[in-house]
Length: 189
Image 1 (spheres, rainbow, N blue to C red):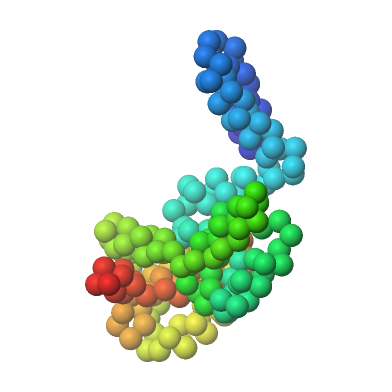
Image 2: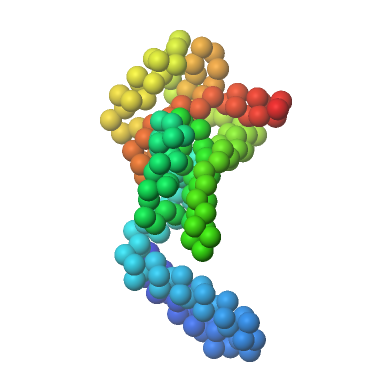
């Protein structure tokens, strides 16, 4: 079933549930859900929503909305953005950061976030798949990843005997390599 048909079926279901819900408070909550689905469709975000659902089902690394080489670049982008996301992850020098924007307070902030370490820890607990490639140096691994015409969204590689996760962030066309040792170093701190 297409995403458009799923949204139509979901709004029909919400309308049915609302019609039989006596509580005004619950009706108001159902209205919010209904409005959220209409917002997705009426603002032209149907395909973005479809991509987001595919991302959730994929178990790929946490999604990011932008990547910056420096914190200064990230702060400038956030400061100058006319309508930043209310909450999202961004990469700063390939480290995950959380972006928060509170429109009512004109508050904008980016701060480091350990979401990647949690993600890598879960991959370790599940058991890592076989390495797809092995390299003597990080530079060799980066050249390999950058040279992939259609990189996988994630692949376990080995650099100097240590497991790393090579990641392609298709939403922003960015490639990164993360050592699994981030998990053990994070636990030691």
